[in-house]
Image 1 (cartoon, rainbow, N blue to C red):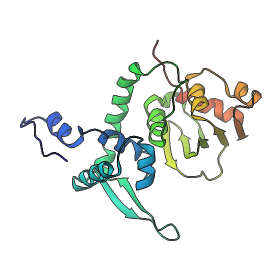
Image 2 (cartoon, helix red, strand yellow; image 1 turned 90 degrees about the vertical axis):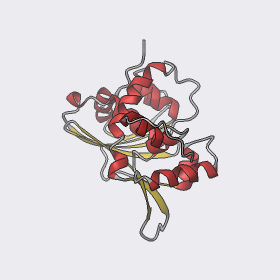
Image 3 (cartoon, rainbow, N blue to C red; image 1 turned 135 degrees about the vertical axis):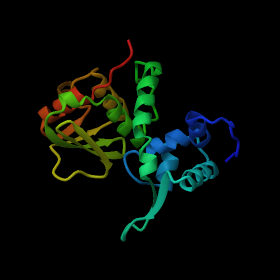
Image 4 (cartoon, rainbow, N blue to C red; image 1 turned 180 degrees about the vertical axis):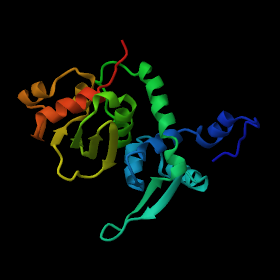
Length: 218
């Protein structure tokens, strides 16, 4: 990575020196939901080259924002995860996502790329804790990606992998996932039209959408 410096005694300038290169912020976004393998990150960032991803990971590791770990057997895979320093960026990413949402097209008709990091950050960006005074867990299967989400009295917890005893298991597509969050279609309509499969409590999904709905620009 370039060793360029703004030579300014300013926190924002130093932050940009660490995070301002192409793909860096999106790479951190992909790790919000938990550690990921190199190939998962490569698949989650279409357009980045293997060499460039390696370079960005080395840079973030060097500056203490991510750490490499080897999973216990039988997996034994090497994964990359956020350190406390890296996770400290999450509130900033959420606010940046809120600001950027005003430029997102209202229609998701032509969306082809939505990654596990996008799922997690979108939910955290629009989550309304005042409407989430209940406890429920959800297992979302969205076009091959798997997220476990727990709402616990105003707290939102997101991680990769299956949930233990989820209240609802939802199988859907990227397009329908966004339409549900945008309120363009109700769960009842999606099920009736055969667009979504759900196991468990449909009312629990209604409660989920009430506190995680996307506020689309008007």
